[in-house]
Amino acid sequence: MSTVVLLTVTGLGLAALYFLVASGLSLIFGLMGVLNFAHGAFLTIGAYGTWWAAENIPGAGATGWGFVYAVAFGVAVGTLVAAVVELTLIRPLYERHIEQVLVTVGLSLALVALVRAVWGADPRPFPRPELARGTTSLLGANVPNDRFLLIATAIVVLVAVLAFLRFTRFGLVIRAGVENRTMVTALGIDVRRAFTLVFAIGGAFAALAGALGGIYLGSISPGQGTSLLIFAFIVVVIGGMSSITGTAVAAVLVGLVQQFANYYAASGVGDLSVVLLLAVVLLTRPGGLTARLA
Amino acid sequence: MSERPPLLRLADVHVRLSGSHILQGVDLTVRRGGVTALLGRNGAGKTTTVKSVLGLVPSSGTIEFTGGDGRTHRLQGRRTHEVVRLGIGYAPEDREVFGGLTVAENLTLAERRDSAHHHDRVYDLFPELEQRSRQLAGTLSGGQQQMVAIARLLLNDNQLLLVDEPTKGLAPLLVAEVADVLARAAEEVTILLVEQNLTVVRRMATDAVVVDQGRVVWAGSAPELLADPDRTRELLGVAPSGGAHTGSERASSPTTEQHVRSRRSSAGEAGA
Figure (cartoon, each protein chain N blue to C red):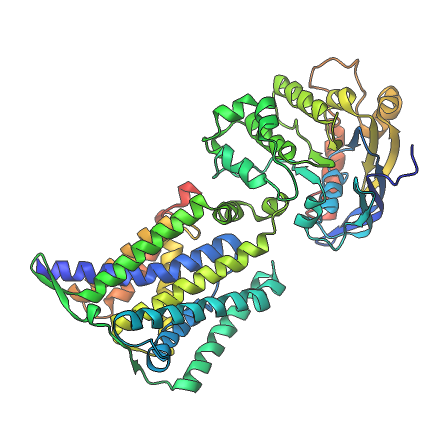
């Protein structure tokens, strides 16, 4: 029983990371039709930004509010980089999807190489605030607290995104733009502003995932974002490409399947099972879980 | 006519889309006030003409809009939302309401910053939309969706409405209702109307422009055109009937369709 509880909570924690990365990917793809392969680099930037801030910025640190400031710094850098990438590289290639994909692939390689050049290829120990270090007893299992931190953050982000999409004018523009970009512009709306915003939001969430991933794994390395990105893409596809709720459900599914398969079968089978899950979903529901809503 | 330039002027407008030459030098003017009907067989280039005004398709030549302030704006090189903000409303051929948004959200989205928003006027014209304001637009009937599309036009203060086949696929009663609403709107705003239903054209059009194979082949007074059965048949492939509200008087006979189809297949896929 305690093993199942531990696996479930850990799987949900992993799902939280996937969701943070995949929600941005899904918003960007839904609104702009851009497959953003640079998204993993935003995660890496967020992780290294947080780590760097904790070591170098006065007031920031590895514990308490200092760590919150450090994460805020990492998220701010990730957001900024994402917005600049959209304005300078994606916007000039508007509606040229192949070129956009090539640019984001190139960017992901370049940014990761840059981080590696500055801070080296070896993993760096990541600060773990005391709150995340302890364990909590849940139904007989000692669950590390960082899992709960991940899950809580993802739930807050999910609720915030849904509220933003539902109750703000930008959210309305984004929902309409996902359906029909051209008609949004024909109503006199500059949809490109929504593009930049969505990219920035996606960058912020990815950077947040970078910081939380650092806590979860205890260390950061330049390639971390890219390896997480593959699973995030699978989550987006299973979730139906442009639905936030679908993405959340798919993230939970993928996180749990991966954890349980890794434990009960063999380490590594988890990744295989995720790909298998993707195949099953695509064969039975080619448009993803939320296809009928679209 | 006064010395003022026309509201909208197209001169030698060409549109090439994926290899086919869809508009081949369109010249037309829309004068201030009244309804100008843009007529022609299927595939003649009516919708493409409207889209070129909005910048939804790339075009060469001259497209100029002279607003109420007397300033003339060249529309090419502007992005679609900038053209619309000059006071040009657009109701596309297939309505294109946002099915995943509620009726109220569709209208809120259409509120433009450059204009006052006349929700009262819209709900006065279409009381049904007020009752259904919380319903998803995707669950509305075709006629109700057309009401949403027209409501989006009338919500803001516009100087020109581009309305593309508003009665397409509607039952005769709804055709009459849509025509009523547009006729009322036309008392306040100039309309460029793409319409196949000659009964509707007869009802409201003051001017008519006929396009064929990407060129304007006739322009002048709409009543004059429709009063001449021979010319109407020659230009549109259909004779105008007495003007009863039958809704069956459409400018596309089977032979025309065949003609268009063969021309289209030779021109490749060309969403004209």
